[in-house]
Length: 356
Image 1: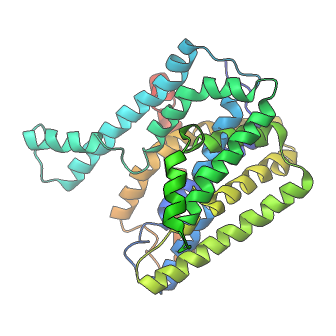
Image 2: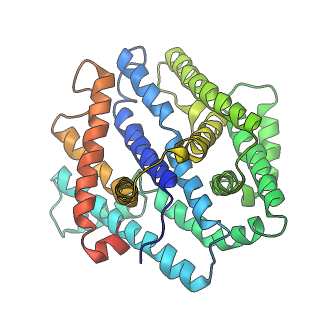
Image 3: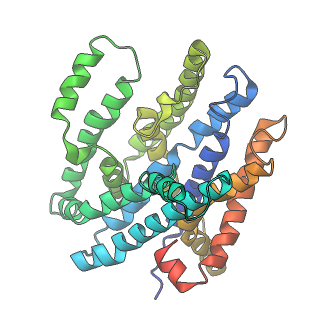
């Protein structure tokens, strides 16, 4: 029996999926075109504006996995949640390793060189597959976090974790991108303390739960929108300035762990929770939205293959003079081709359950 899906969360999931594709389509030539060109500035814009995607995916996980309505036991956790992600990770690691060797075309299949190359490829996550082992790590500790945030003082403990996440992860990481006095000493001190429980992506997991369950007061919500937009555009501007100064691409000021990334992702999540959720959909529309939302994991896994095949056909962000139109076209093509492939493949029960 299909679980009841929340429409605004499915829409956010779709937006985050498109955001990931936009990030990867917009950054195809981010590192190999001159930083003083319109094409690079366009790439920088898409690189920044889509930065909410991964954080929002994790926040969606937090809102669902840490929900009060959910119950956890070890069997359900490992067999129902972690094992499917692990299976998908192993399969796609082998798939992309095999694909990369075949595309190179100079290593005989089954040879010792082929095996050695495969071992190298599968021992390190292919660039977008890093998300799966990270997600497994979050899932492993999710029942523990669930107990904390759903305790009688769960709201206060959630706020405490988010504040520590801001101090020890977001502020520390952001400060490291600027030339500040005593920066090295302060960072050394923070890294010495470095409470592992509130660093990494755990903070976004709890943040998603908190915003989903409690939201924010109106004034604080408006401030989040203002800071989110202001900081992400400031981050893009600073990246452009530093890139022009150094002659090399810089993306440090809007990465996931920066203040810009934190507030931009929070703003997008709140916008969908409080604004998009008001839109009325009929039953048929809801069914279509939820069906598409259910395909986003598969789209995430397969979109890099589609992007690479299109690139080899000359279809990429530099295929025409107008980079904006080129990137938008590439995003649309990758999304719809990936969706069509996933839609067909998910008709196979084993694939749907274990691989996407």
